Image (cartoon, rainbow, N blue to C red; front, side):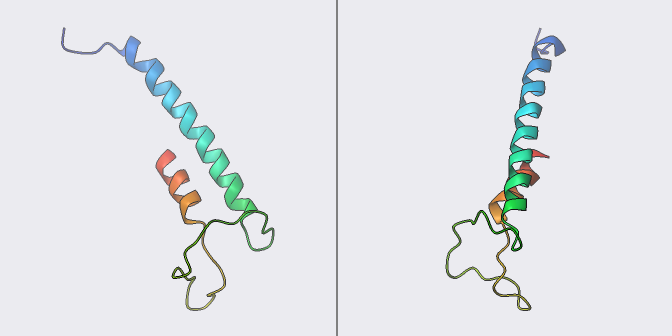
Length: 72
């Protein structure tokens, strides 16, 4: 009686996967909007955060990448 049946666990796992999929879609959409060619959305980035040494003006969308990574 200490084992949880799959009948009760399946709706919870299904709803979590649906929410994760929706969050990933939003994160990918905002990542595409934050491309330097489009430049519609920008993250609040501290002044100390810089891009790479080759392209210091480019800022990577860190929080959007974290959201899509966590949803997977």
